[in-house]
Length: 281
Image (cartoon, rainbow, N blue to C red):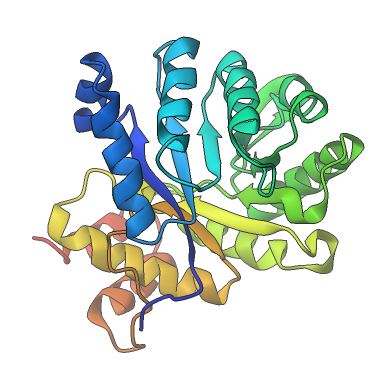
């Protein structure tokens, strides 16, 4: 069954994709505009924009190019606060204000620098829960309890800057399954369950679905993504950053890939990878 209610933020305009990187290198903005149009036609509800290490000027030009051809909100995606600031400003200027751009993303370590951008430029926000700050050091969240504690602290900070629950999106940080020796995929599902609690009522959750299948053969990518979505939607996931042209759907309970994923989630350590390899070896 197709996941009709799934909210898809189009992932294809990202400098980490070799084809897009080559377009940016050649200043082929018209070709990138075509990617935005394709994603809109395929059902994307928003368009993610990530220029990687390229300049603020490239980010600004790309946003203007995309917004000239599609009437969709943008997810401004960068590790650089300057790019986020300028991107939000341009996105705000270019749209009618009916849907604010999405700032992607804020960790606990970056909250003090990024949350105040709300006072300069109206926006929604992605709060990343895969890490926390502890005694001045950045540490990974290895349990659902740690991630949800981080969520509570970030939400309290976000509310101080005027973010409403509806403007807050949680990203538990989806790990590549091929390297998940610690069982973080199970943690993600637990975090999604926890985000559905009353403390976060009205907020949203999302994952970058392609992260799940990094370094895996192409034939197993979509089946594994769909297997994960089958479990994650039941845990409350309501959005992904993904490719809207793909046939995302929930799988029947007896589907072999879903059965394999459940076995992986129940296994420990390197046994997870041994089970995973059954899908393609």
